[in-house]
Each structure stands twice: as C-alpha cells, then as structure tokens.
Amino acid sequence: MKCFDPTMYFITDSTAYSEAAFLSRVEAACQGGITLLQLREKTKTTREYLALAQKVQAITKRYGIPLIIDDRVDIALAIHAEGVHLGQSDLPVHTARRLMGRDAIIGATTKTVPQALEACEQGADYLGVGAIFPTTTKVKTVLTSVDTLKAIVQSVSVPVNAIGGLQKENIHVLKNSGIAGICVVSAIMKADDPCKAAQELKEAFDAQQKEDRTHHCRQ
Image (cartoon, rainbow, N blue to C red; front, side, top):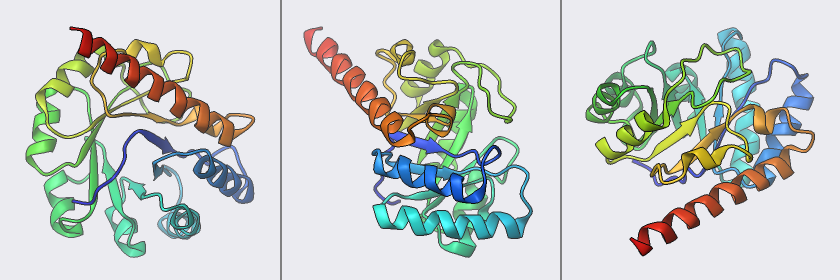
C-alpha cells in the first residue's frame, strides 16, 4: 500500500465544462493544495474516459498528487494510475486488489458499519462515507448520519473520509468525528476560483482537526 494523504480529496465532475475549462479547473485545484484527486466520469465511453484520464494524469503528476480512477479498474490499469475507487455496485475490493496489486490505492464507498468492515477485510486502503448533506452532482446519493460516520470511523483502522455536500461553512458538523479528510466535488468544481476554494477548504478542515485535537487533549 502506498503512502497517501487523504486530507483534501477532490472528486471531479466535467459535465458542465469544455475539456479545456475542465482541465484548467483540475490544475487550479492542484495549485490550491488538494492531496488526492479522483476522476469520476459516469457517462463517457471507455475511450473518452481513457483519453481524459491521460490528460488529467499529466496534470496530477506535475504536482505529485495521486490520481484515483472512479469505478473503472481497466482505466486505472491502462494508465498506471495510483488507484481506484469502488462503489457498492462495482468490482469487489478483493478483486480489484488482485488485479492492481498491493501497491495500488483502493478506496471504497460505504454507508454502514458492515459494509465498512467488509471493505477493509477485502483490503481497502480508505473509505468514503456519505452523503453527509444532499449533493448537486448527478450521482445517486443516500444520506448518512454523522453518528453512522463516527461509528464507521471507530470500527475500522483505515482512514475514513466524509463526502456529500461539504462546504467550508458546514464542515463543523464533522467535529470530533475522527475522520481523516473530506471529499468535495461542487465546493471546488463550481467555485469561481477553484484554487482559492481548495485552499480555504483545506484551511477550514485543518482548523477543525486542530480544534478536535485540542478538545481531546483537555479531556
């Protein structure tokens, strides 16, 4: 398993942009300090997905940011991406691990403690849990309570990230949840200044983490 920083996990959504505008936003997010980038494409053909993944990878490599491919192990393998993220209807984690090897970063979406335990038993390196808030992406979402998020964090030993409608103004609800990072889509993708948005989100989360550590130290 590779070392990676899940603190500021950016998930893309190219649907509203030309390719040039999309890639520009990807680069701006990288400049803003994201630590992981997931390329998520639900409607592109395999060839379109592959071509875009190669272009995004050229950017992430310049910034030393691991590229995670959503759903598609074949695309990840084809471009030697650092990892893949799998939902509950995608390939099982253990199958992806067998195909991609022990050094690949493999993440899984989980919404319950049993799902989280199963993903970890199969070799997941991190978990994405949510949606914490309703989202504006075209991905089907089911809301997950912060209590469930905390229960998942306490049940596994791998990093857990919260996802779903997170903005710098509302991440306070994740206080003392024990998460390792946040996953965001629209907060960066739809921002007027994606670079600044990434910076502010990371600063807000880092401040929340610092406050949580201070709280625990006082107990």
